[in-house]
Length: 388
Image 1 (tube, helix red, strand yellow):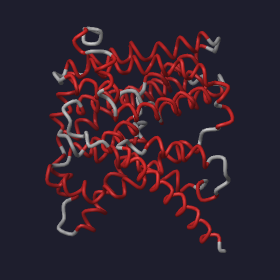
Image 2 (cartoon, rainbow, N blue to C red; image 1 turned 60 degrees about the vertical axis):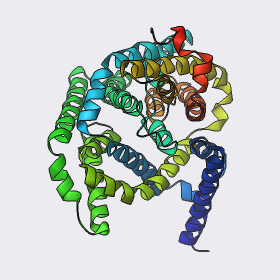
Image 3 (cartoon, rainbow, N blue to C red; image 1 turned 180 degrees about the vertical axis):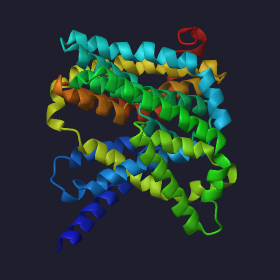
Image 4 (cartoon, helix red, strand yellow; image 1 turned 120 degrees about the vertical axis):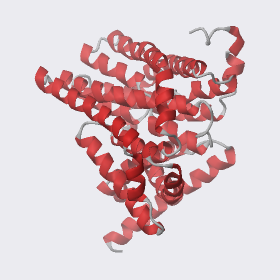
């Protein structure tokens, strides 16, 4: 068999396996994300050349970019700006509740302060990719609490544009001026992107719009990739740039673009979660299982409080508050990035971060399906959550 033939065979078998997992998840009425992650963990034990190339990594990244772009198409700039204004208090609560647990656990484990600070970042940031994918799977993108959740996620991603270069400089001992320069570039880029989304939506729509579906698809995909690439060059998350392009496009263009790009998104997002799990060294997980589980339990509760309070401030009903609460629980790609940055300071940070992310990525998406349970555990009228 030729090399290309074996690659096609292996990749086809893996994608077919993901399709089987999706079918099982659909029968159970849950998001397929947990099954994709488990598949990645299982396949990581085998040497599969088709899964080790640059193509899978690129496809995984493209999946996240398209995921956030298509979610952006669901909202207007005005809607998102209003929700972000209402979410400022909840965003502050997010930091106060979810950064300290990681920091304190790191110090309790007698880690270097730098590693403890990075663990605080790991516990703080919710996974935009996982949450947005699960919201789409559960057909909740237009639920009343979803804009609030998306605004919180966007606020966290923007906060990471400042925290990540600071953390990297802290670890490698970079100069103060270089660090401040990186942060300033990221902040200016974020502000420019928001202003651009507000004022240039119509010209962007005209660029994408065409009677030919082929030309419209190529135009939209090319535009999103260019903006995502530019965002990364300016030290912004690529997915944030794609999201802002999505909210800038008009309703007519948004509807057509969503239809054309959705199938490409779904395939690549599945590969993202598979690739995500493939990077985890399963041999190191048992040794950090207990601290990871304890940290997951604490920060699942603190994130749930954050989401609930944000929904309260937005005037969402009790069912929506419960959905918002559990939607903030999953951690993912950015947490792994932060753990990797600190691996030179504390090698145990990576396996602990990986185990922690797996627990919350899997349990969080399952809880999103059964969010009504939180109303039974913490009755809304008891005042235990609404007064936080």
